[in-house]
Amino acid sequence: MSTTNTVVKLKKGEGRTIKAGGAWIFDNEIDTIEGRFNNGDVVSVIDFDGYGMGKGFINQNSKIRVRMLTRNPEQEINEDFLRVRVRNAWEYRKNVMLGGNTKSMPHTGNTDRPDLNCCRVVFGEADFLPGLTVDKYADVLVVECLALGMEQFKETIVNLLKEVMAEDGINIRGVYERSDARERQKEGLPKVKDFIGEPFDNPESVLITENGVQYDVDVVNGQKTGFFLDQKYNRNAIQRLCPGKRVLDCFTHMGTFALNAGLAGAREVTGLDISEYAVAQATNNAKLNHLENTVKFRAANVLDELPKLYEAGEKYDVVILDPPAFTKSKDATKNAIKGYREVNMKGLKLVNDGGYLATCSCSHFMTQELFTTMMHQAAKAVHKRLRQVEFRTQAPDHPILWNSAPGTEESYYLKFFIFQIVDEK
Image (cartoon, rainbow, N blue to C red; front, side, top):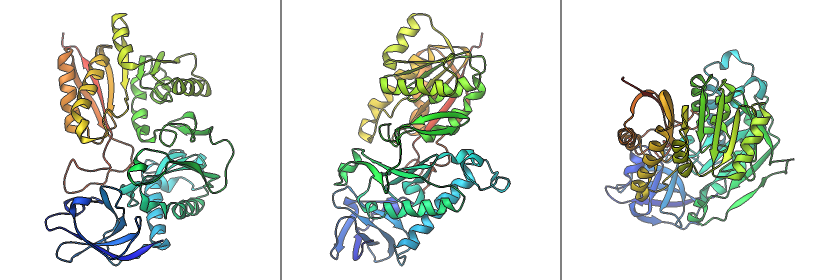
């Protein structure tokens, strides 16, 4: 682990992000850098007046020039430091992903710990391991590393995770790396898709169970790390709305919301996705859960298909909208709002009076305030009155790390609403 005596000094009045509780120092906030270093090395950070701000790793290829690892200027960044970070992350999941029942449940493996069968075990900055994501799918770990400085730590962290989990009787049979996102290029890193350590059999078919639904996850070719774990409890929340109902699940991906609806006893479920590969996966998952007679999937462009359904007179008791992020930058937010408004207007038209709309955004830049305003506009445009059933965010294995500047938390990205469409007549 490469630690230098390099000192990064902030400009006077800068460093607002980390002073507010964030983890990033941008290139334009730095006054001087004293000492020799290689990109990815751990450096010390001081304020303009010499006050120690902590340590982080530096990368001159990125506008995020320093990602902070610790606020303690005296902290050594070594294996013991990483072991504490890893153990804290795992203990947190054990507490929050079991509904408060950790004391009553035996620590003997996946079958006794259903919410730990699949979960995120490291969530970057929110676990104080910036740039690193680790997801657990049954007995497989999938790693995504998006920061140069974390490259030197990732294999150590993986080995520590396996050790800590083994203490709870959970044995990991293999690790796969899915560091193939475009963000790697901003860090000066190549894309990587490969095993970490010994290869394991059939990474294209890893069986997991979530909310009682089984999924066949392809950790090699699936989106992101293979599956979207952040909606776990949101998918569970729609189950109570679906018994006996006709349900439309848009942007279904692997059929997650649709299968939760089917498991809950919906009489008919249709899932739409533009990807033929996703539809094939979803159809296979329906068969895996013996739901193929009630849960059907087909490939379609949702924005084109919803008006066709409306023109055909189709109506649903529950409509679910889980689109991909319409923006990944602040500059594109205005156009994203138009996109979200359009799809929600089209979705609202298909809901029976008294029925339900579940809708969300997974973009950090689409804030809760912007999303709420957009929903008011969409409902008004199609003359629908909404009654909010509940508001939710991402599952707690994707924790939101607060800072003292509300609305700027990098780890807060998922907004999820359930509305009832009410008829006053």
